[in-house]
Length: 303
Image (cartoon, rainbow, N blue to C red; front, side, top):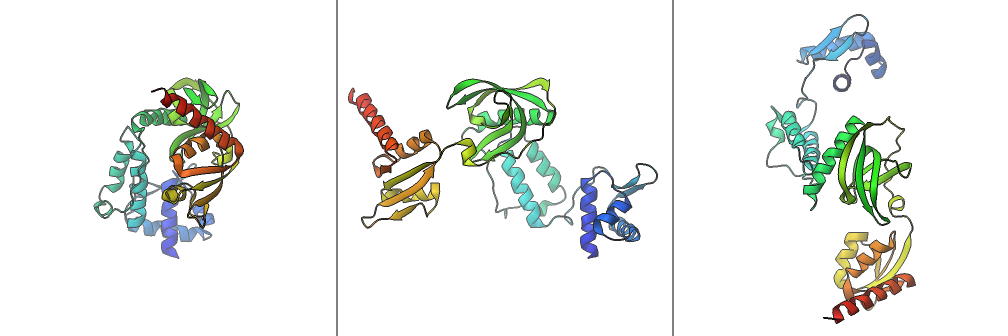
């Protein structure tokens, strides 16, 4: 349809600095004459299109042309604004708020009390996260090495990396890039990073694989867990693993069967249930919990 093609041409011209009529004709599988008529229609509709002849010539849209309501539906625009609002919840610069203002100029109908999507990517650590995110963004955009001190399960130490992506996953922020120490791509959790600084030393782009989001890549090793939970904590099991992680027994207890990927996290998780859980398997986890309980008795028994 002509209307769809017109919108498609406009979208391409907004994405690219300049395109030729033959390129547009090939893309939309129509004749060059059809493209010329389409450009004329867009000009009549008030779109400021410029054409230049000769070498490096072509068709372009006047610089600083703004997206109008005719290109995005109200729902699409609200979803874009919700995403920007979510990013602004962790930004200390107010950059995304200013970007939203630019998008909304002359389009007040998009921003009103009927907004029904609200994304908040911040956390209890917003005060410390925002400066780190800003430093990492600077390093990524300028292709500069990132230096920081990292605190992990195997200890702490100074690290350097080539940062490529900021990642929000598992309700936390990470940075994905090439770790100089490991000589491989790694995810680093921002909450474990301190003294984050952008170096003056640049780096050349590598071929970057997509960030690895599998639990196994971050928490290697599966631990099959079998435990009986009190029915009072059913909501927590559902919140963490979904409604199919347990089977209700005749006595009302919930037989839980799942795999956990990290023994330290598993022990912390189970301790949070207090006397509302009895671990059946594995035996090593039962022994660790017993040892922790005995140590707690010794600590509190001295008082």
